[in-house]
Image 1 (cartoon, rainbow, N blue to C red):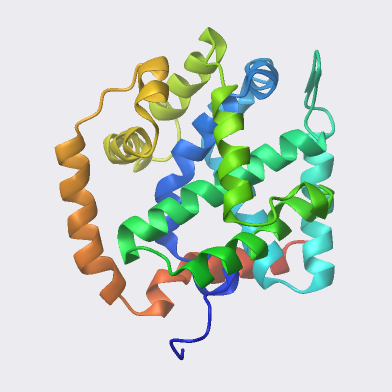
Image 2: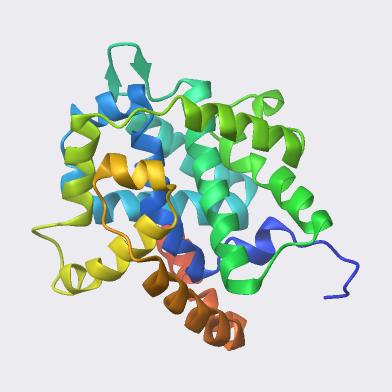
Length: 254
């Protein structure tokens, strides 16, 4: 790619390294008072973490890499899944709440991207922000709600984070997510790494609110090793999950 060409969402969103931000994104989402309350009332959210991960990745990969018809179909499925998730003052289809969810996915993805590959050029950062609006708009969020530039996103993010409140219910869900008692054999051995990455990508205030231990030196050492090794991997390895999820979606009956 010529140096003058900005990075686009299709160039970066399939990188499996970005999954490192998944835990932090979920904890940011459920720190929103309305989201946390509704999630606590739907216990299978925490009891089926892999189902949620698979659903989120399918939505992301199909929205970005699928055909327009496929993107419309996956958005329809996600909307149908959200329809029954309601609580007092909460509807999972509320555009403002969908905007917050999309914003957490964008913010954690970009922070992981910069930790692994280095700082983004300004042109890349602005282009990716604009491209990532599709994650929100595919679910019906008006395009005008997505921040117009990085400065606007920073204001939106700062205001949103200031309003977060980690409740006992949210802490309970976070504990279930980060300390699963079921699932495939490989899940529990991988959780110490997941907990380290999740804590490292949250602010100190949110770590304390969730009661997450954190070792900054250990986190830095892991990210340094990742930064030295991961970018050397060929693209077909780094994007392998995207190919698998897209192929699986296309095999499923409509």
